[in-house]
Image (cartoon, rainbow, N blue to C red; front, side, top):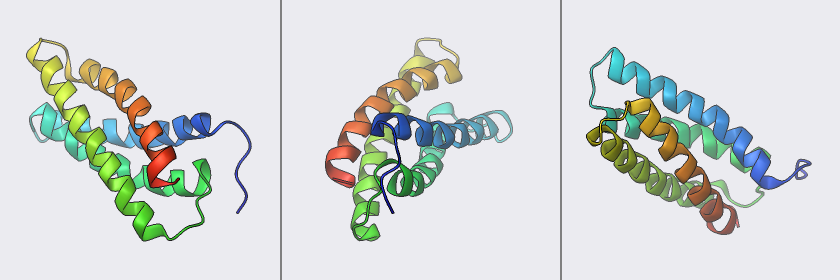
Length: 125
């Protein structure tokens, strides 16, 4: 498989957009329908988004040809870092009185920048 055209960070953002949509959908469902605390729901959403992100980034963003299992573990560790960061930002935002989705939007921007760098250099490097 050849590397898709365009800058890797744009491809990463596109894959991230799809993974983030799934993350937010699960977050909102768990908070609104299941009455989970927002930080825990943010973590569950991040876990779902990580699985979708791995598949999309391996194939589309980085056109990774190496063994998938080591890359998967590295990606999951990176996603764990992103998930914990997301949960912390949502918890802080909620504590400050922000709506959980606004806090999650701030977390998403921070985590996007953080995880792109780590995934480019380590998970799929």
